[in-house]
Length: 243
Image: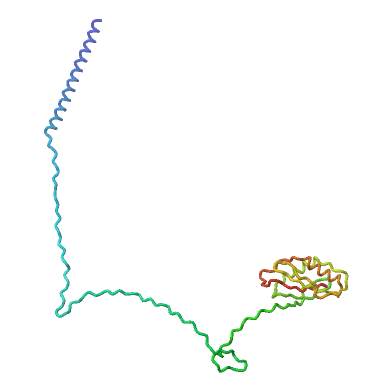
């Protein structure tokens, strides 16, 4: 038992001796490093200050350009003068109105007059246009039918419009029982809107019942389709025959 205790004590003593040696070596190493740093700081050379350098620029003299010497006997030339050039603005010339020539007479139907101005014909004033005459259409109307035999108001080449007008009036016409040769002419006007105005019996058939039936067919068909846009007249007069 004593031997074990002695061994433990001997080991601890050995460890204590080793730790003391290590501490001693560490202290000596740090002391040497500190001494080296202090020596280097004491013997270091101080930094030098930067020197100032002054620079002066030399002045350059400006010399005038040499002009060529004038030739002997030549007169000295003066510098050219610059004249102000003003643009010329031309004003438009206004022509005076011509005075009417005196002693002007119209042309004579019996020959040229000897007076001045007789060669100038007088200005003719436009005459009012006469109303358009009725245009007859060579349409043969068969018994029991109706057809347009004349137009008023101007040139009207629109046959499709006339066909539609005759078809609509024919649907409203109830023909009485009369002879085959009976016929009546109804006149009426169509406004641009298609309204029928001024309808009347133009040429009677001699049978009042037949005339009234044809006139009623025209009046009951109003309004028709508006007149074509390409037609220039304000209205269209129609002479329609019923047989």
